[in-house]
Image 1 (cartoon, rainbow, N blue to C red):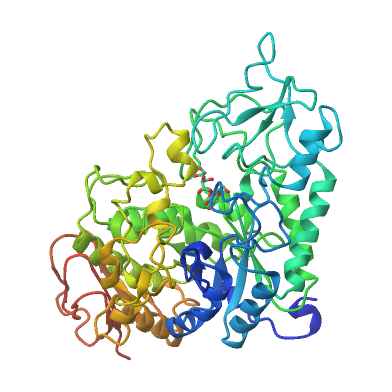
Image 2 (cartoon, rainbow, N blue to C red):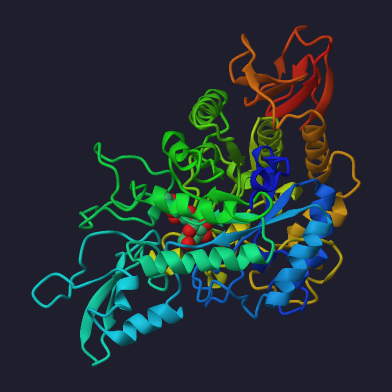
Length: 555
Ligand code: TEU
C-alpha cells in the first residue's frame, strides 16, 4: 500500500531530495581485494549522513561478468560475490534506514548479460524457439545471411548486432544489442519478459528498497520493423533531418512505466522510479506524467555549458516541461558515465562527455575546473527540485585524465579501435584518508583502477572540518538548502544583472552566479542582504569570477 492508501500522510520526500550516487566497485573495499563491496559501503554510510543527503542510489551490484561495469546483469535477484551477499545488501539497507537515508537500486531492463540463464537458454534452443523470443533475434541479410539485419550502431561503436553459432555448429541468426555484444536486448513485446521484471521489482521492494533508477528506460520498445538508422547519437537524443531515432522514446514505453508504478504503489512507504533517459525536457516530461515515473535525470542540464544564458534557457525549459505535468525537475552535474564536472569545467573547448580524456590529450586547468565546479554546484543546489550527486564530487574530485590505457575497461575503448577512451576516468576508487593504504579505500596496494597520487590531497580526512574545503561547502549547502526550503521553493529570475551573471530569487534567498572570468559589481541592490554561502569569497556587492553566492535577503 502506498502512503495515501494506508492513511499515512505522504511526504513526497523525492520532490526536493538530494540523492547521492554510489558506484559500488569504487566506493570502499572492506575485504582488501582492491574492489569496492557492499560491506565497504555500509561501513562508510556515516559519511553520507554527515554530508546531509536524503538517499543513496547504488549502481548495479548484481552477479555480472562486468563487461560494462555491472550494467550487464546475469541475475537480477542476487548479489555478485565480488560485492558480497544478499545478507550484506539487507544489512546495508537496514543501516541506511537507521541513518535516515533511503536506498535506491539500479534496474537494468533494456538488456541483460550474455551470462544470464535466459540468454544461454535462447542460444541453446535455436531459431524459432520460445526461448529466443525473449530477445531480439533476426536472420542476417545478404546472400548467406552474413550481413547484420539492419544498420543500427552500438552505443559503444560498431554494429548493434552479433551473429551466433547455432547449436549445430553453423553460423546462424543475429541478436540485437544497443550496447556491448555482452548485453543482449530483451524483447519487451514478450509478456514473459514483463512478468519477470515485475518479479525483480518485488524482490527488491520486499527487501525494503525505496525505489529504482531505471537504466536506458527509453530504449525498451523499438519501432516496428526496426527501420534503418545509420547514425550514432551519443548524449541527449535529438531528431536528425527531422526524424527521430527508432530505438529511443517510442510510445510503447509508457504502458510499461504505468505497470511498474502500479507495482510500487502497492507497497507501503513512498517508493520511487527515476528515469535514466537522455531526452530533451519536453520528452522527459512525458515519462514523469502522473501514474508513470516520479522523476527523471535532467541530462539537458548536465550537458549545459557554464554560460549564464545557456543555463537560464535549460533551467526554464526544464521547469516548464516538468511543471506542466506536476513533476519535480531534477538537476545533475556528474555521474559514472561522464567526465567529472571538476575537470569538464577546466576546459574552454567543447568536450564529448562520455569520451573520456587520455594522458596525451590536452589536460584540464584543475584550479579553474574546481572553482567553476564549486560555483556550478552551489547554483544547482539553489534550484527548486531534486538533485543528484556523484560520489567524490563532494571532494571536488577531478577526473583521472592520465589513466594509463592498459587499465581501461570501458567497452568503448576496445570497440572504437582504441580511438575513444571512455568512462573509466570518472570511476577511480574514492580517497578517504591521505596517509592510509589506497588512500583509505581498502587495505590493499592495488586498486582495480589505479588512483593518481594527487587524489590523497582530496581525501575526506584532508577536508573534513577544514574551513573553505569543498566537502564543508557541500555540507553547509545541504544544511542551508533544507533550512531555507530551497528544494521546495520557486524560482523567480532577477532582472537587470550584468552580462554573464545569472540570478534568481528562491524564497528568502537570492542565488547569484557569475559565469564570467571577471569579477562583477552588483552595486547596492543587495546592500541589505547578507552572504549565506559562497563558492568563493563573495559579498552582496561583488561576485568574483566563476563564483556563486547565496544572499539572504532582508525582510
Ligand atoms: O547509460 C546510458 C548512456 O549513458 C548513454 O549511452 C545513453 O543511452 C545515450 O547517450 C543516449 O543518447 C546507461 C548506464 O548509465 C551506463 O553506465 C551503461 O553503460 C549503459 O546504460 C548501458 O547499460
